[in-house]
Length: 385
Image (cartoon, rainbow, N blue to C red):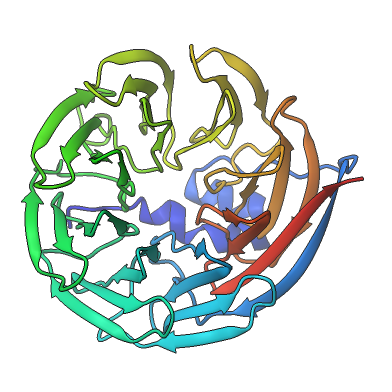
């Protein structure tokens, strides 16, 4: 299997929550840092919760919600796709898939698009849930599709990126890249901006493609794998990319976090850091979570460290998401943590459930949506005390 997750580590997550010390010794991993009381400086209110199905379990999909236009969309491996009112959690429509949905939803231009374990891309009408088209691609689809300028961009788990006609699902172009033998399970979602598609690959390279025809514009190495074994040489770009329009930011596992120009891929800065969750841009800061569970605030122009929050180390955090002047992350025991973006201080905490939160939360119109691996979804607001 090309896309290999570190199965021993992932399968231990729920067990660790029950008996962290014993299982940490058994699986030869560092136990998660015990949480200590914090002085809450933000008031968190849970607006609603809803079960969306059985969840991804231990498949390692990092399935999360998508939100737009006052709606939130959630996919489940066995239970299909749901559209819910963002304010109330009320289900507006649901749709089934011909095979298990493996990606998070992608929303845009009147469509909700998901990918399946069998390599199908499925497009549904955003208002009704009626299926518009299906397109059989080359491999399972693990990351959220993107819709831009009449084209749906879908990434397969085999290194191929497909450009599909948004109206018909017909393939317009394909970009193919060989993947290393050993990689983390998962793919960095592509992003589209100003007629370009940016994608990070498992060999540590970041590329820009023309949206109209998939042609390669530039290819820049963010990190280069080093070492004697395939495991040592893993430098996957697996987390979310970020773009300002003129710069693109990417982070690699066992490598670097870097900023490059959108137009040419010219490096602006880089610093050593290992991450598999990706990046959030908040004003002049780059927020990232390293592979040890430390949350960092970096200067967007230079990469200089502004602050480091280390009280959540080894808690297998999700990627960060901005909500007001905070960023929130989920952890392996179902806690949600809010961090002040200016100081890096923990300012609020809420336990949603007991199952891991692996997907990056999504924030829309001030509401944060958080999804656990057992298919539970919650909506939160946050205010100053």
